[in-house]
Image (cartoon, rainbow, N blue to C red; front, side, top):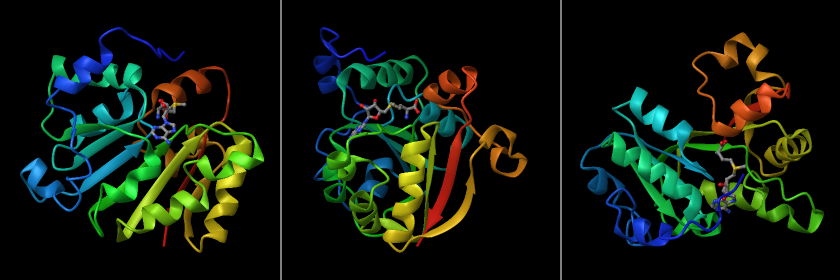
Length: 212
Ligand code: SAM
């Protein structure tokens, strides 16, 4: 369900203090923006932000930035923030292809990719968020010891992502093809909106954690 056109969504976003509007100017200034030295973690393709809101609530000493290209779903994340604000959670409305222009070297501690769009056609492979093209963008701003965590129920996308890890010269730290039945990897797992939906249909959830 994607609510593409909610009247007024763009106006609400344009006026929201929870959205970083001048995101290209934010590069290298995220500590200043949050007003502290805490680590900054991002979710790319956040949707309505359920996962990131929960993470921010559970971890007040970590800052989170949710990135989402569609106003309609970002609006839901903003509404949640307005109801019960957390001072360690901000949003950006943008297309992730430009992400290397938003964060400076070593500025980001961890990247979450949850249920990324599969782009099933081969010619669209470079648009997939765990593709080698995106990994090289992440490489420009992820801390040297930082990690990427990726979850999906889409086995084809996951198999592709695992291959890309090798191709891009990254290291597999941990992997499971059935997260909810993997005691070690599932510990402390926060379900995303799509994860709840697809696991309730019986789909196993795949997850990897990678580093360089
Ligand atoms: N992460 C959420 C979850 O697990 O419930 C939402 C998953 S939804 C399938 C994927 C989301 O990623 C959509 O809201 C989509 O608009 C966003 N998205 C996909 N590609 C993106 C991109 N290149 N830049 C920004 N957002 C993107």
